[in-house]
Length: 298
Image 1: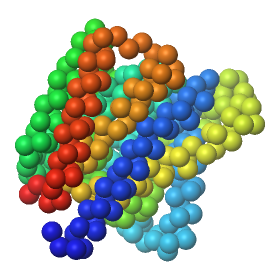
Image 2: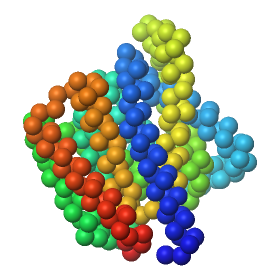
Image 3: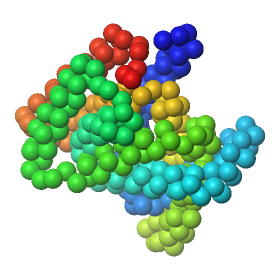
Image 4: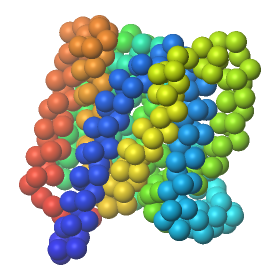
């Protein structure tokens, strides 16, 4: 790997780690808003994110690439599908957090790296090294154990995992910078967001009619806490293969498991504890692989 490639890889790892740490602890932020309807929160999240992102695009004089992405049919299809995957993931996650299913969101993000790495192999032709295969084996074992501990198919977890893995793949296929790509996606989602905001104002129990001043401030800042980690993720996705991005995603479920168990008193029975240990073993393998070699799998 030459010096330029090494710097790109380091920047990608730093961006990825920062994104996943933020995503893990953002659960606390959404938990502060658990008195509100999840769909309303998504509407406000999209609108506030669009305002922030358009301001960034204008400041960076990058309006033209965004307009091109929204007017070229082939690119618009990719951006629109990515937007659908993104809003599906947002909605599932926020609904689960505000309805006391943090542990199941964690299960979803345990499964997501497996889906991501499989997509990397099947779609992009990436190859897995020995330690990466070992990490995936531990992940599979953890998913099986945690699924049985729920006693039912983990529909929310599976949907979270699938939507996020496909979104990550689509981000690799959109030739836009992070700010431009995310701006285009949120603009596509804007009509839905406006409908949800109008609904929010019209409901007696809607956010504008029931939120305290502090709660409303938190709602207004959902765009900021949404945009920052997504931009970091997009920056990372353009610089790293999916077989490396996949293992980094283990940080989110680890943090959510700890938050659900220690901070929000969700039950952690013996089966879930075993699954938690298996995930840590998989994470240790993937981190060991990243430290041992800097050469991406061809």
